[in-house]
Length: 176
Image (cartoon, rainbow, N blue to C red):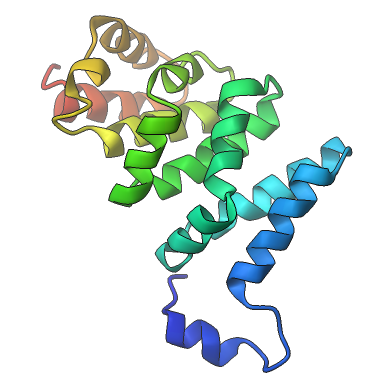
């Protein structure tokens, strides 16, 4: 559910932890934990915070976006990648976040995720590419290799992926 800063302040107890401080604690826990399960839980929580635009500036300020991008660049574990791309997908609607993502990650690592066996990862990746499509990204996003991958995705068994790939090809690439 989307919140306003005033609503969050009203709901936070006088001696409670504010949103930015809580996100900062989660970032510290992720960075200092050696447990895969703990990292997975924290990353899932951080991705959930990315749903609400009121958190965008906090997320940038405390380094959550950097964690998502690090995971997408460096991790090979599917579940970590799933949560990282979910967070990026939620955050990329904001122009500041989209610019940050392009500057620090680029689009190429996202194209690699289109080949994932995890349908949630593929769905969030296609959605991210649709959201990030603009004049700056047009050439790279509508590259023939990407179009071929989307065309292949239209033949999968997962209707959600088929529909997203179709939307991408029809609305972004203007092909059928």
